[in-house]
Amino acid sequence: VEKFKRLKNEGNDFVKMGEYEEAVNKYSECMKLNTEECTVYTNRALCYLKLYKYEEAKQDCDHVLQIEDSNIKAFYRRALAYKGLQVRKKNMAGI
Image (cartoon, rainbow, N blue to C red; front, side, top):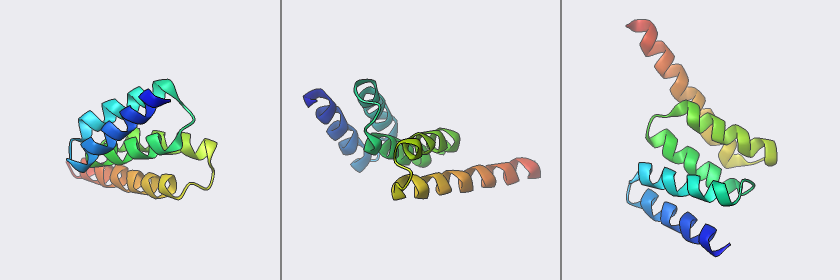
């Protein structure tokens, strides 16, 4: 439990500094310790959105919504991921 909290806090600190790749790594380590903690997934989804990794963000949000079907952050971030995927699809069509 202590290691999980430490890793999560380190991930949160990286997010505050705009170090999203490092934050993703910390949150991913947290998931190895506890797959049921939804905040780690929504936090990692935020990082993926910042890194324009929309498919990964959507997958993290889908996972959360399987556990907590009314998680507002997961719904919101999944919507942002879908929006990013749509924009990317439009840009690809224009090429």
